[in-house]
Image 1 (cartoon, rainbow, N blue to C red):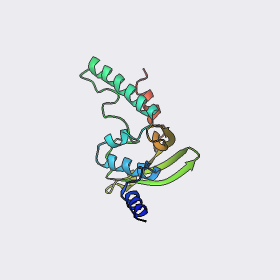
Image 2 (image 1 turned 120 degrees about the vertical axis):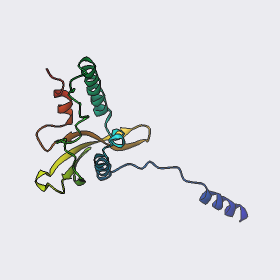
Image 3 (image 1 turned 60 degrees about the vertical axis):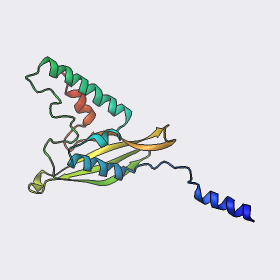
Image 4 (image 1 turned 90 degrees about the vertical axis):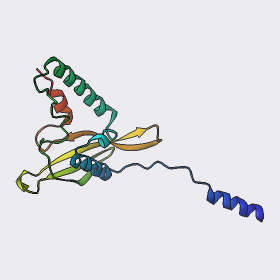
Amino acid sequence: MRTALVLAAIAFATPALAQPITLTPQQIGQIFCLSRLGNDMAPVTGLLTASLTSEIATALEKNDVIQKAHPDEKPPLGDGIPWQAYPDYADQCQPGDVDFMMDEARIRIDYAFKDYPDANFTDTLALKLIDDPTMSARIWRIDNIAYATDGDLRAMLTSAFLD
């Protein structure tokens, strides 16, 4: 009887194996908005697909080459990565509805201006559910941003360097 009690006590005292906690598309939208409002996109860079991360790195390298060749001119990404349709700082950002399509999700990102409500706009994050071997789980990652205007982040990164 005592052995059973000791084993039960050990079982309850031993922490269970940690299970990975994955972010939902809604949570990724919240992190994205907090990053936009704080003008610090570093938290978002860890939420990008490898493919989008690579495209951004390539664009930044091209941008650096142009900047070094023409230091007196503003390079194509002189204002940074175009994380939203318009460069103006929106004082409000809210994740909206999420649409799921198998291994993809679209989440609305609603930007608003307190003093200029006619300037409000909505971009859309395109997320993919990818395998993460480090977590042995499938996780959501940002794969693109569809702008309120025509176009998207990937197209903008490419077109910025066309002659």
